Image (cartoon, rainbow, N blue to C red; front, top):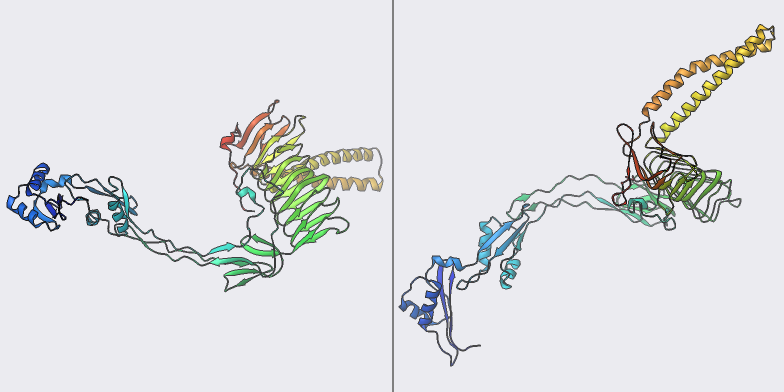
Length: 546
């Protein structure tokens, strides 16, 4: 370090300031000519030589205000303040001071903030760091408001998976691995199943200009609902298992179902009828019945058996019912394949590979998402949408699909139509029989049994003729109601083969002789609309929690 004396001549807040430091032992002092020369270079206003000499000779290291210097402002740092549009953040940009100006101070930045109306949430450490590290000419956040914290209702934390068995909610149309899928989560008596986290109180915020930001204070009451085999504890803040079994969430209520687990269903177990859930580790033998109030899960195959579930059905293999297998469920159905069986499902149907030679009725969607994803020689009624890769077959096996209509309404329509056709056929038969009897009577056959038969057939004919207008009227009303939802889709990623018939209500679609490739069908204003399937812009299906 030099032993010589030194000085600083600089502009600060409208004045020229001079600070003179004395020399160290053996060093050279500052001469007043050096100061006056610097003043001329910087364009500083004139100051008497005597005053400059006095400050130089004093050399006390303290700043001295020499003279007012309005023009020196051009050398000083410019400080600009920007406030975010939402009023929650303010930045300061400090330009680099030119030679001859004092470096900006914390107070300079604070003054600029006050002039810009920034009075709240000022971070002095940020300002000090900006100046200490000379972060000039870049916006630095120097004030932050407090956002309001809205009141939050109490929240429920479940200590089990309330959505297990519903992978479609998070992995839509990725392949569902049935081996990893499980509807059962066992708990033991005393396990904590759910608890209520307390609500969050509202806290008002403030913007950087000091304005009050009121928080929303409305909340709703949240309660834990304890169902069968559970109990409320802690004044209604926790649910505890009161028995061993399968825990599940049904319509917001936590329940623990009794659980039956068997290796297989056959003559060793007999038919199973149970209020809770049933897990079959292996297979279900032909001719046996499982009826469960909860879920049914089968680890291997199902043949000519009947499964009825108040919840979901999971077949980790599939079902080949040989025309006699039947599954009914109130929830969703998952299976690797469905062959020669009847399915009635009030939720969604998810089949991994194929539906063949079967009758499937589902109130929601039917999705096939495996490598094959084929529907062959089957009758499908879907209240929502249908998604597969191939529909029909090269052999043109009849495949009929109804989409977007309530299955119950469609069933009533078909039943009424069948009854009308049967009644018309019966009327024709009765008319022929009555004519034959009338000719026999005219030929002299007057036996009482012939006369009685004539009366009985005539009465039946009259009743049938009376019933016909009622059936026609009912059929007309059903037909008027069979309007397919415009939200429903048929999505075929590969081919619709000739021979398949697709119905959206009363509108029918027949693919051309060579079939239709990569097709999406939906109901339009005046019929069925057809467009191409784009894997990069896949249609979305909305899945509700079943």
